[in-house]
Image 1 (cartoon, rainbow, N blue to C red):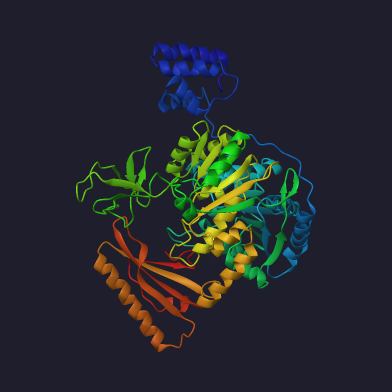
Image 2: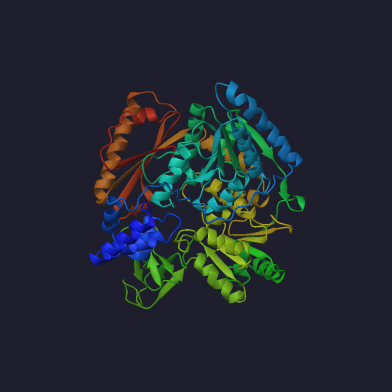
Amino acid sequence: MIADREEIAAEQARLDRSRAHKQAEVLGFLSGRAQPVSLSELRKVLGCSLVAIKALESRRLISVERLRVRRDPLSHLSLTTPPAPVLTPSQQAAWQSLQDAIAGEGTQSARPPVFLLFGVTGSGKTEIYLRALALVIAAGKRGICLIPEIALTQQTVERFAGRFPGRAALLHSGLSLGEQFDEWQWIMEGNCDVVIGPRSALFAPVPNLGLIVIDEEHEWTYKQEDKSPRYHARDAAIELAQLSDAVVILGSATPDIGSFHKAQQGEYRLVEMKERITPRGYSPLPEVSIVDLREELKAGNTSLFSRSLLAAMKETLARGEQIILFLNRRGTATFVRCRNCGFVMRCPRCSIALTYHSVERRLICHRCRYSVPVPQNCPQCFRRHLRFLGISTQRVEEEIGRFFPEAGVLRWDSDVITRRYAHEELLQDFRDLKADVLIGTQMIAKGLDLPQVTLAGIISADTGLNFPDFRSSERTFQLLCQVAGRAGRGIKAGRVIIQTYSPDNYTIQAAAGHDYLGFYHKEIDFRRRYNYPPFSRLIRLAYSHTDEKSCRSEAERVYRLIVDEMAREDMADFSVIGPVPAFAFRARGRYRWQLLLRGSEPSRMLSRLALPRGWTVDVDPVGMV
């Protein structure tokens, strides 16, 4: 209000006589308030229009001012500031290596260092990140911390914002547009010390950047594959660090094979943390048992759970402890087949089977979200012989209800996490012991710290093992080790049970022994023998078309162009794989064929090709399918 009380009273009387009742009501409401009122609150309480407010403003009875109010995405969190823990000898040795470089070499060397922090699960890598950031901040610089999933933001924010209260910003696609805008402005103005988020947070306008941390650096979610630009956040971060004279820390318990190879070659600086730290001090990694599912079938056990896993679950629940069960397949049944004619229900727009979801009682395509109700009869032979085959997370949930009806169960996959803050709420419920069992896909494997979990069960370790991709063994090993690392992080020791049909596979054996180095040496020999990265580079050329024949014809045409170029020039270290149909041959109504260029410089060949519309180019793809 800018008018005095007498003037307001006179204006109210005049407005009432003129039947401008809303304007009079606004004046009366504001005159009784000692503090300013937001425009949205005023309109909500009184139901008045902007016209009425502007009319009062034009007669200088009230004033309307624009105030900048930051929409803080962290406002819903209750953050505390715990004291920094005392470093263990293992952490201290790792910290000393980093501290010397950050304090001195980061400004003296022409090429800022890249550290690979190779620490077993639970070794305290986050504390090293926090101390490195504190050192950078003390020097007047700022940092970025990348995480592989939005689901991990709360846990990471709690640690960073707790250590640097009011100085942490959050950026990810789950924020509203207004929140993203406000965070961007706040960062650009230098109001925060650290930006946290998934790969896109790397492009935040951080002034005076001094440190980039990439946690779980091996995760393939750091590569943007679905749209241009198809970049890898790790590679982009290293380039950005060189431009900004910043230090990069890549952290993982199971580093990417390429990253570890670079560390072995001296391109990255390797820092190791071999001891696991829990509230009970130094602790061994959890005991891992392998169960041969072939033997379970021979013994007549057709359940999803082996006898040893069932017994372990019973003991764990009896002690009041928590369980994590991992299966990288969501839904109830992975496909539906007619046992009479063999017909499989498939998506009419994609080349994949429809997945049965018992809650919705629908068949859903996990690629394009096409869905149909479950038919009573087979669409091909019209018999009532449809069978639901394969296992998925909903089926695991149903099986737990059958064996342990008294157990509280939470399921964490993209079918359940459909709204904002659902990740945080689910994790908080599990931390608060509102459930005994957490079932999930790969989300539960990525860096979660759940101290009450003492048993981790892997329902099927074979899900991704036989994928047509040279990285399938590496991904399987990383997932198994990461899931195993969730058990025994609190006061009590942990146990892990891996169920598999391939118990002798070196990937399974290495994961059971927590033997990263053993796995690395076998895998790097395989890569060297067949000239796969890191001993070569790949470029994937993919073509899509609505017509199957046209798609294949175009792929073969480009293949012939490549062969002709190879014949004209000496390219001894260059080869082409394909053309072949993509693993998902049809997606959203479009057929797909692909070629893979392999060599030390496959971009030389790419520069000679004129690719028409419909082709996509992915340099250094994280997968071949």
